[in-house]
Image (tube, rainbow over all chains, first blue to last red):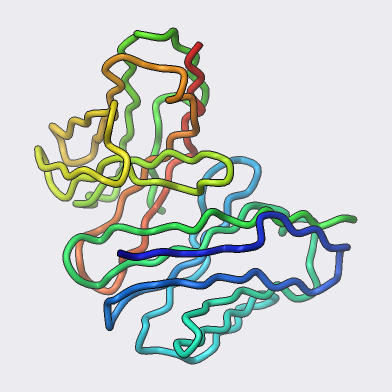
Length: 115
Length: 114
């Protein structure tokens, strides 16, 4: 069975601070995908990134960066110089590459950026 | 742009009513999904469909059924709504296979059962 754990339920930081959202996963699959989604107050989940289990390179996209470490089964997400618009609920998710393409989601981390 | 639409943003129903939640996607995606989102529980998969008239149970199918008569439309049905089905319902779609696996989500329907 697959499992995604986001131990941080809520985080608040002051604007311009850096913040890291943790994600730990469990799977028996040798190949899989990991995702991060953002859910702003409007409610619609927005795709942020997909990472293949074969690719352990870290990725940076503007103020966002992702640290994938297979050895610790973690896929952490860092926002640098946070902004109020980053306030949202962030979900980490896991998908097997075999069979059906279901996503297993973590419970989410509510991030509040304080102006 | 991929667009997934849901018939209602907010819905209030009475206990025992039959409730239909509709989802339509315009990108010819084979896969469609229904989730419910509850505080502290994240998103949990109710049902999904990988083709017209095909469906599979997700993690929490009890009390729900689905219908997919056309590729673009996936309906979630609450046969007899109960208060514990008060929740946010999210629909998603994705293309089959390839390197994607990314799901595209609708805006959600917040259902209240009284």
